[in-house]
Length: 204
Image 1 (cartoon, rainbow, N blue to C red):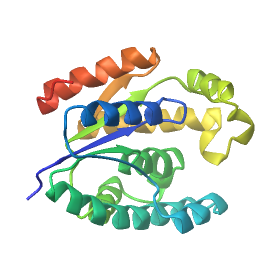
Image 2: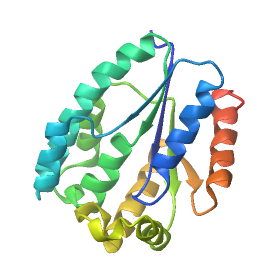
Image 3: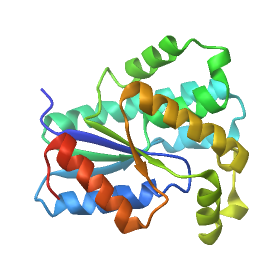
């Protein structure tokens, strides 16, 4: 029986998800909860293969394999009462590989949702937060952090437009909470805290 909570924060690169997962992690620690901060992908060997690969089908199954290994660990921790905050998870697979890389032309939506559900042993998160921001703003943020010169296939601005559409499409379909991430870090956090109070009855 799951005693803890799983919260996923996702969004396009430059949306601020990594910053917000860390902020939320620290706030939860102050509530004297057992808390874990994690991220996907997990396995270093799989990460290397993903970076070297250029085939969306291979990408998809590499991410699913990594997720299965990850969720085996998460399920045990949730059963121990941990609150887990994850920087990325299955929403990225649906938005990037399936939607933006056009696997939707090759694979039926119900089937990809089934494969994803199977990969995480049918564990449902307690809350999925999608940090929504325009690709133009995201690009500016990446540039300020000097990441722009290191942009890889997942971070090109035209591609991010498609990814954003994917996140918003599945957010509507799967009841994910969309947060306006164009605001300041503090404002975004306050929006997240409000959602946690409303959805999980937790006051931060």
